Length: 212
Length: 258
Image (tube, rainbow over all chains, first blue to last red):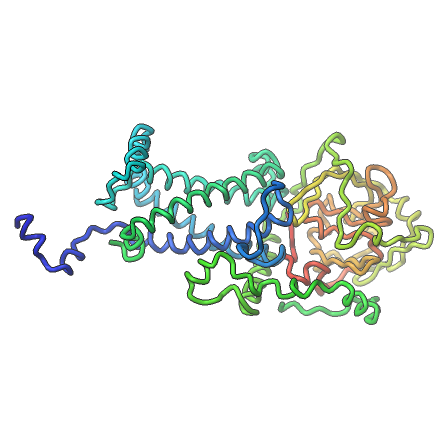
């Protein structure tokens, strides 16, 4: 079949022929994670306000979750199960299926720089959604690391006696709080970029919903 | 919450009501989940207002009870809270309560008696001189507040497990309940009460406990958050029913272990 003939095929056929961008387990864990992370961040902001780490930073209740400290803690320690179990499923499948290796590696500094330059000039291609560019690989890899760090630092704040060696690994209770905060800040920064770009390239959003 | 609360023995219901009226949280707090439509995206994502109303509050409280069980499993009677050198003590150690320091109970030590009750063989009350004659243990540990801040303090007193054994407490009972002079109260689990660092505290930094830190008695529990360390303790009951606590009844996690 010639290229010309292919372009004349009915639209429905073309759609079916679209390559699978995201397998079902990636899409499910992605949206479960989206729900969990919003609950964790929203309640975390309200908890932060009870004893702020920085004088200049305070989260208004209107953009936080839980209304007061007790409510926010209930949300945080309920949503943590969803977040952690989902993260374990995602990372296990990501490693076991070779998904991470295929999609996220290798990450070469040279490629990252080249793709940032292209992106800033508006010339970064999104034609093939099945292949992540170097900037995507770096950001997705980074946010998975941030997720792992936020869970471990969170555990060390929650259980500084029973898990005292983990807390000590983070430099003690008080420093673990800062680690937890900055892991949150990195995830929020990631989300700002991630959501903006998903809205700029709507077909990437569609791919995360229907897979293609 | 599903937990039933009985009036603890030895408590005048009239006084309790008076205290409760005084201690009720602000109306906005009592419905702490309502209107918490955070991150508008959440309600948009789900298409319904799941963060509103008593249903979500009930679900959250059920999960909080589940978390109590998880924490009880994580708790080890042999895992000790880290201890620190004297140089690490936070000075001044913060006063912290739901009232100002001027309103802290001013207890007459000469007439003070610690009331003992519940599943205990010897229910004799204890005066301060009697308590001060018991073998003293000491700890410099980190007090972690549920709000997030922490401070290192130095506490001396009687190991609570020794005291419970001495008065013939039923160590198979599920809870130990503490009543405080200002109306505050706490219930803790027996494994925590028997932890080697759980202390019936009479001194701070080797000096008689000042009013700010709970004179005449504080229960120091380095394996629990600060609010589970009651001050101005006037009565201790060993029992099988969970009598709740001041903050726990308002939605804070019951176990609140560290």
